[in-house]
Length: 389
Figure: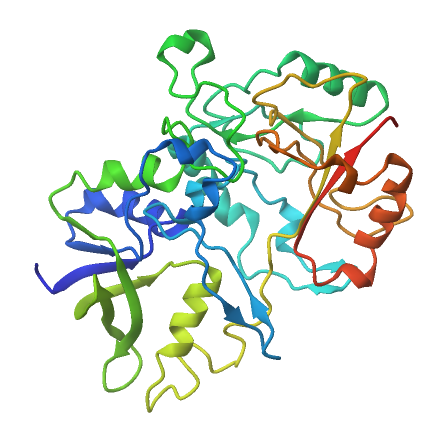
């Protein structure tokens, strides 16, 4: 194995995998280091009880010593192996200073116009299905979606119509799914109910491994090393350039050197790597003269309402085909961003104990709690509801 490369990319997720795909045809000698192995194709991919083994069990700690269980997915493709495949663009105003309920989101140095060409290219690479002009908050686009929107199943189509009749503006969700509805017998996607949070056993989800890494590693100039945990970065004597990467590869400590090193191992692990890479020039870690590396994490904050009813069952399998942005920037009596609403695309929970679920009469209290300061520590909440509403 050659130990010096033109480019070293750490991580194969949405960032590292996509960059690898772009750079692979350049002819540059590129080393890619991935902490985990390839995710195996097996029945547990679609098992509610089996899927949890694909998330790491490691424990991290906050500044007060409290435990954090981030549940990362350490496989080729990173967390995109278990993501929900919804691929939205940020709005133009997302790049400007904006007041949120808990503080000010600062202005970005780059704007939407700087990212727009790359959004377009990413939508093509990840085969995003959607329909331009139907999202009321949609930013301008230089091109439409490369693939048509995924059709609604009957119950979702009905809900879409009811929401529209009540004055909301649902629209087809932009989904990175490898589906061919015109010729379903040739389609990788079979419209299953195990998409959000599950690996795709039939490799129909546009994750980084399938869409970016696999095509790239066919090139002779690409070297992918799996089960390689990067421990620290080395700099030159001046401390101004990263020149080396120390990794534990299948239990052995190995040093790799490169002209360019790309740190793309996720927001948390990239920060942790920079903080571990202290030296005389950087006693607080690399790129951390501001003392902000590892702080101000913007988590994937969400809440879920799950309704179970015997009045009108929902037989849908692949139901994540619509979205609502009517409250993205808030509403008249709540002038703060509230984000996006979309259906979950998960299989039913087996052996659920409905006696522990929320009664319809208590939904309002639960929602008020989730909107209060008392719930600030909660980064994700699923609220199962059972009964007649």
